[in-house]
Image (cartoon, rainbow, N blue to C red; front, side, top):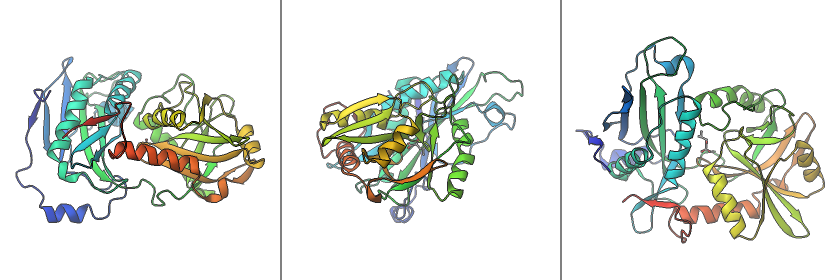
Length: 363
Ligand code: COI
């Protein structure tokens, strides 16, 4: 389905040596591949897309997104495969969540087939930018913004879709080393009826002051509680959160249920499936700070970890709040988190079977 897309690649390709230099120290989201895809929505229809050299956008300063925040994004990854090919992980799930986010912000929805074909075209064009090492990937970042040049508060009638690609390694400089977290009582991420389940730019902007407060407390990340009771754990930074409870040698994987204020993470969903397959009890339910504090104090909670596309699985080594401070699992990555991470990465890198058909072969 490339018939909606015109290829206009760079006339001055980056040399192999220069690409290797740029990819020598990856981290997350700092290096970008050579091309991007852009596509406009105007007059009630999506126009032809273009694959063009990566570069600055030209925007009217009155554009809706810049003033009223009609801006959503996604994130998914392309992995190099053992035979030298490339495959993406569950891109259709991201395409559908992108549509759900668009509906919540009264924006035009990008058709799933165009979303998927744009990514395939960009990956094929920039396949040299897909890192080969285990744990590294080409992070795809779709973006949608309202671009009507008018200051009235209303949904934009024109939109710009942009798809970028960034060769990436570990999201956190610490890699799999456990992070410390601060439970925020002063700020909430999302409230019932709000935009918590949408991947919109404003959610992330609103999180930054709480993240700064966590840093002041000496912590790496913030933990969010629900807005109504200020009791139930919802997310961790921009990620979903899991707890491992042990009972007479049997491990239960618990994650907050999707109440409408949480982002329905693709990694979250995948870990629930893999956890069941690994013989864990799996529960999606409300999880209070009281249960967290008690479980850490009496040793019933053996692991806490965050998950997301960017960071995959990140163990939590210590938790602080106004109520107290706790160490988790001796500050080391736990066995459940490590096993889940290994299983997920093995599917993504094509070294384990893919019984759920999660991988989408691109080339
Ligand atoms: C992820 O973990 O994939 C996230 O959502 C964080 C991202 C905004 C960088």
